[in-house]
Figure (cartoon, one colour):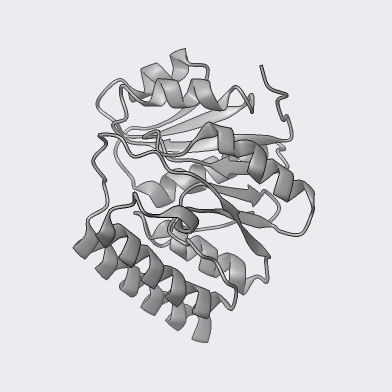
Amino acid sequence: MKNKNVAGCVIIPAYHEEGRIGQVVRDVKEYIDCVVVVDDGSSDDTAKEATAAGAVVLEHKVNMGKGVALENGFEWAYDNGYEFLITMDADGQHAAEDLPKFLSVYAEGEYDILIGNRMWDSEDMPLVRRLTNKFMSWLLSRRMKQRVPDTQCGYRLYACSAIKDIKCRSLRFNAESEILLVLASRNKRIGSVPIKVIYNDEVSKINPVKDTFRFFRMLRKFRKEQKK
């Protein structure tokens, strides 16, 4: 058993992850005791499996999108007095053994937010996803005036003080990009941590065409809001 960290919790948004979420929770609990699964309206046994594995489960009666799931997780962590939270995907692509890397870098006190970086070793990443990630990361880094190699990665650490009152207009996967833009506009320090990615038989819930369109629409709306 590893030495567990009690200053933080792990937030896992989940939608139809029956058969995976239980093992994800058990793996995480080897490092951090408190795991919160936000079940975003799943009609399968996602909530049941997460509960059986020892997670706190927040349930949405209907699917509300990743942005809302993240907001609910942020609010729960802040209200329960945690110093930081770590977000992970529910499909098993994020390795729990990378958690100590986040904790070690965060303990140095230089950054408010840490983003997992898959791009240092991205050969196994599907080509379209790799090219899209590189382009979006370049574009967002310019906008934020901070270099973030993999802005699309959902494996992240946030200081709870930094994400207080974060609200996302984006309901789906672009919410994570919007969160970075908001944090950068608040002059929060954003760093990166190299991680490995586990590609199994999961099917990505990201639609390359629709979600890229939503990404640019989110950027346009954010620019307008900033000008106001």
